[in-house]
Length: 266
Image 1: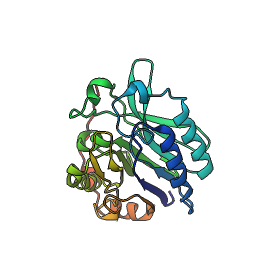
Image 2: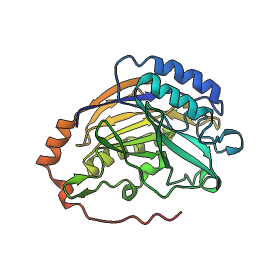
Image 3: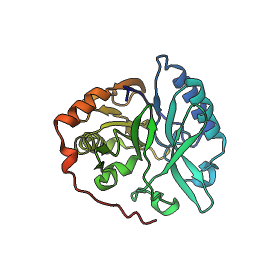
Image 4: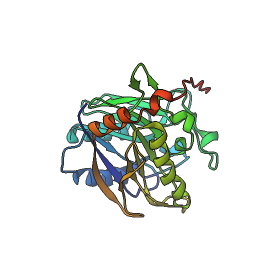
């Protein structure tokens, strides 16, 4: 397993305006000059955290997915973000990991936010996802999912870890920034994995301020990179496969984790 280069994009989002967001991300992606393996964009990159599926939800083959497919090919990197998707049975806040060749994998947000109407309007997912990029096993989650340690718990079975990097993509309000930063570090420590959290900045359509505080954290819980509060930022971080292996081999907590099974009910 080689080192993994991950680019974090912390940015403002234009409320319920996909075309303006396409233009903005086209500009931001154009600023990524160095090679990268995985590009992370905030939750609901094309609309902001809207709970208005009538105007914001798209089919899985809609214009936002086409935009992501083109950009993944141009950057020769996987791109990970979320968008509101209209499916056969309802609407989802769906994370997509789209690869340079155009194929993609998806994860539907498991924990829908109860302080908004998200949990009433959208359907939640019941399946975890682990994707592979450059030999790294990556577990992606969405915003509120970060609060639930059981859902995020890594595994160690037959000498193999369930994942090496956890990714959280969010529209996390500044009023709870301390919780966001603390949980990113906690998830890294308890799972012996790198963690990358990407959050938006700016005011959303409800007047809620987002400070960003995007971070990359190593498997010991030490912050490798922290974006400036409230500012747009693009940063490529290199995650060391050797450092992760040495830490896991010298501090074998994973061998003592409790074995468990999650029964996720829709």
